[in-house]
Amino acid sequence: MAWQTSILFSFHPPLALFGFIFSGTMASYNFHWLLTADPVVPSERMSWNVHNKKLHASLTIAALLFAAFFSFFLVRHFLLLALTGFLTFLYSAPKIPFPAFRFLKTIAIGKTFFLALAWTHVTVLLPLLISGYHLETVSMLFLLNRFLFIYAICIIFDFRDREADRREQIRSLVTVLSEQSINRLFWSCIIVFFITSTMLFQYQEPWEVVLLTLPAIPLSLLFNYFKRHRSDYLYYFVLDGIMILSAAMLVLAKFAR
Image (cartoon, rainbow, N blue to C red; front, side):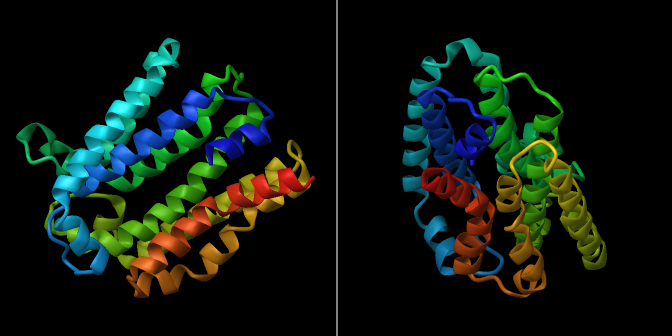
């Protein structure tokens, strides 16, 4: 997804950035599952996570060391990398069993907002800023477009996890809103996403905008299906696949041209 941003805006970020993003993602995911308690709705994947805490801890430490290594090559962007780490940390912070982090559980926008913000920051804003790209109307529009798309996906994930979040007293819009209100929130994101996609046509190549927009169609069509089913394969292959689909199509199209 970060590579997608570099292709769309025709710049070449340092390779160390991709290493930092990969390592930071590995650290974030393993740290999150390390802190996750027994699932409310058991699944094979969740059971595996619960019974492999030592592996998660080892991978977290290893990934952090690699992230530190890659950040050495990006040291002049230290404040930006630190902000990235902070935003990523906020997603899992409410799960830390210490009083200092308990207040984060009461923030109404909660993990849904922080996760979408972190993903958008890492895959759009971070590559742009580190590459020295001057933010303009088109880049800000693209940033908003990606945030809305990722936030819509995060709503579905949080709807699946809202009973577990309620048990852990982690508040987000998805845990406090009714299902009808959640539906309105999701469709509002999708509608504004399509509006921003339409606006991008005046700045980007039409075929690029089409590829950016296409994944929102299966996401919209499958919304109710996602809400009724909790299969790990459905969420971690289909839904995550939809999130990366435009990037994969854009990279393939770029090589084919």
